[in-house]
Image (tube, rainbow, N blue to C red; front, side, top):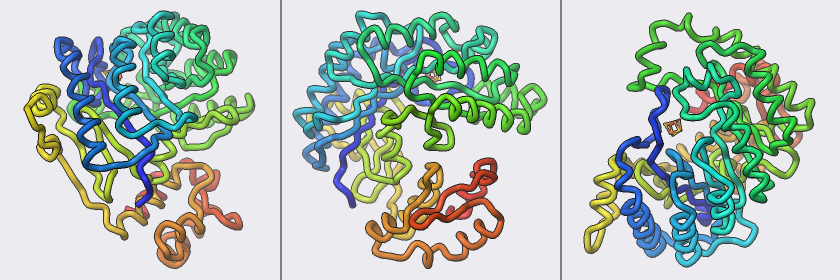
Length: 382
Ligand code: SF4
């Protein structure tokens, strides 16, 4: 397996839980933030001894709302990563922030701690939609956060937008993306709303789909944003992601290329030594286990799946097809010592016959119609 050069760190605290969100995050255990950071540091140090890797070339501090951490805590986490694994001097180091939780002082502090990329959960620039989504911020807060990131000296800024939200029209979505392109925000993600089981949104909308934009309308939104972004010079490099040249997300590319990574924190997932595993989703249990005298990291694990060679080949395909330049036969044979065209002959012939994929001399990728049926392409490799 490739050397591990990526790390994800999960910060499971939010000011208020959004009704559509099933990420591991709490909006009341704030007294646990300090002990949580101490536990993270222990988990990182112990893991570095058990599963050596590095130097890290990408670090992603996500959540939750990592911008609820003081810059000093981020500095502590960064120093632990540096001493435990070494961090490449050109590493991409991202911190997720939510509008309404950042200031020029906190962003400057994060920058000093070594963060060089900020990902902002904007979701929309319509106040009605933000209210419906239960977000704590307004459109004005979101615009201010983008400006403040640039003011604090960050060049690499990413903004997330959501599609298919109740009450959203195509012109709402277009207006949101245009506000970001005007500011030349270098990276923009446009994700579709998912109805996740157990969330208030699931209860509210699962049996009332007429309250959501129709599938057809959502596809129109997707294609409209896509043409705006491409017209503005953005590269559409992954199904939901666009960047100006030189700003594609290195961290997410690790996931899409099915490469290994460390995951630290409550609910964080890792892919190390051919195993995909997930930590406990209980913040209290996470902190308690790591506060013991000699913590047993095995007890932290809630789930663990061995990815054998056959499974790894399938993952390579189904994750790789998320990227617009698709999968490469050469990369496949370098990794698995096998011929991709032979191993997946049945699936590739079928998808090609249906016009969902197309071949270039050394790659295979989704075709234009395949973009709308990407889930069918992925399913072929499950
Ligand atoms: S801010 Fe993000 S992580 Fe927190 S509840 Fe809302 S969607 Fe979930």
